Image (cartoon, rainbow over all chains, first blue to last red; front, side):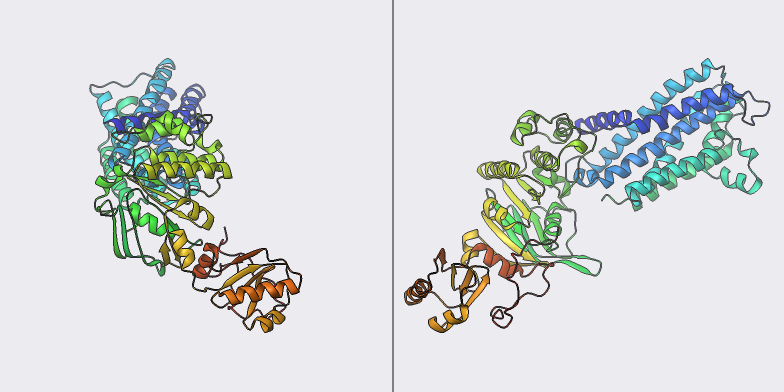
Length: 243
Length: 328
């Protein structure tokens, strides 16, 4: 336990001390929630802006932490030879991965603690059927696994700097196609079909259903997220190069 | 049982054979250097012993364990210093040492290690702001924090200033005194000679010789007489007078390729006296450096080595450079 706890402490400390990480995990989501709730430019239809934006940005927050922050940090650790060096210490590989998972969850809790009150303050009222919070947490867990797998898949294959660019590029693509700010229904037909198969749209669609207008989580969201959550970690663990 | 056993190790990377049959052993309380030019296979060899590489042939054992198969049992008992990197860039030495200490059941106290490697003043400086030498010293401290029985140091002196080298030497002497086994790679002959009880010279993936520095020097494959005097003596005239070939190896350094004898020494001294040339050095065995150069041959920088004896045929040729330090 002691190695795991020490590792979690250091990983969390490093994550929360990196300015660029805080920007992408906390700063940008908070700005999006406030800006797009107050400035009604998003095509949210009859739904109030804030009730559309908050679930979408919560989805973005999960993606930022599990894919972007984790992936970029791990890529640089590989580039700096940290992962190689750790391999000849008694810190087991499953403990290292476990510490990274715990760190991602801790950062996500910090994000929730910041974003939820901001949303509530701006007038967000979750649609609120019984079990909505539980469903949202289950969606977030599946999405965390899927996005973490995706981030680590890139981190394990690409050079640190290329991985940095790739993770940021993917973030932008998934932000635009993931139904987080722009409803997937506004995308042209073929693109919308493609977007629905992505984990980003599956997560935001699910969160809109459970935390937004309250229509419930579409089955499609569960299926798509579950498929990604199984596929990406397996691919990452098969292809990850430690040095 | 030796602490480190490596026999007929072969390592290939695709079509390239990096290590082609290296064997070495090291015991507890012994410091062994793997010495050779860059690209000789030193790092590949040490990484096979650390468990990073699976041998394509041959056998490696550390403390009687297979570095890959018995990885989990072995890692608490070894300490590793990689050639570069290996540390979280944003953490300072104290924080990194505390973290690594948490991996081991009975770590060295962090404060004592910081003092040992002279990083107390920089204890809070993030790794990326440390100098190259300080980074190396932190890597050394990290290799020692778990009280390892076997310590692997890959090029520990590269980028380290003279003061740091003295510090490293005293750390290694301390490890020897505590009956630990230390395997160190270096491309610097002088460091190997100062640090190690025994050394193995490798080149192009093969072991060329091994033994104590003194034994290696004595094993020089060209016994003869070496002497120093002023530059540009008339070696042709001297060859005629002494009846044996005299070669100017480098400016002012000469070699006579026959076994030493009292008569030869006297004749040499006489000839020099007649030509008013001071005899500033006279040796009848090869130095370690000469042996080393004869073992590893020319560096990559100098692709057309002179054969012994061909200097006379090439009078315009500049004296051979000091070799053995490959390209960096």
